[in-house]
Amino acid sequence: MTDVDERHPVIKPRRVSFDWSDTPLHWIPGDPVATHIINSFHIVLPEGEKWFIQCVKDARPHISDERLLAEIKGFIGQEMVHARSHQGVLDRVLAANGIDVSPITEQAARGNAERPARMAELKKRSPRAWRRRLRFELAAVAAIEHYTAVLGQWIMDNRRLDADGADPTMLDLLRWHGAEEVEHRSVVFDVYRAMGGRYPMRVAAWAVSLLFLYWALIGGALYLLRRDPTVRGPVTLPRLYRAYRRSVRRGHVPGIFRLLIGEAPVYLRPSHHPSQICSTPRALEYLKRSPAAQAAGQAPS
Ligand SMILES: [Fe+2]
Ligand SMILES: [Fe+2]
Image (cartoon, rainbow, N blue to C red; front, side, top):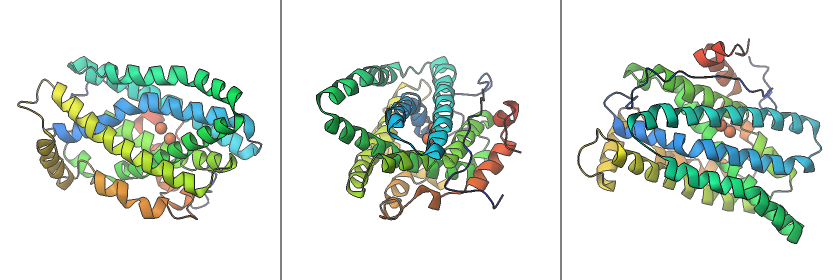
């Protein structure tokens, strides 16, 4: 396993599927707050990952490096399966338990549906402005991909959720996804650089992405808790914060606020490259025993 090339691991999608029929709404038993903080990712990821794919597809015709092109193909395949799998949670776990997130996801889907025409129009008007816009979006995706890899490593390493009876299907989804995020963590960063992306824009897009992630996690958790028919009483920000601190102490969620800002010195180092963080062998080791990846028949040997 030590001979894995962290810059260029082989990236290929695994056509996994999940059966949600036995997954309860509070898939972390007795901890609706941790459940819904993590559920926030299920809200943003399906459309978010479709946007990642659009950005990378826009850049692809401008890339000549054969190896990066092959990685882009694997990246697109993986993100498509991720988006579909998280949509399954929205439909079969949240909606099935009376929590409808479609007002948020439909708005995001409209943004994605309108984006190609908007970008084409911009390209016609000003190729320079189009390139600058695409670079900024790629830099934002690269920053988010840093966090999906770091959080993926966290969920793979976490043992407290298993010990406290978290639903094994949900854990497998999150760990399979996290492992593939670790596998393909360099792709968008490399695409950004291949498109001429430089350091100052990387910093600016990181700051925007960080604010987006805080907003998505806090807003998403509040939205879900307020619609959860089993949660009693008003869900206020102080109440959410107190319960969140308890969940962190129990090891059900990472200290997300410190974790996100704490990555600044890593991600903002001018010489940073994603291959310097996380571990592909650890990700492959999980994928080897992931029930979903095994069932898909494509676990790495
Ligand atoms: Fe993903
Ligand atoms: Fe990703």
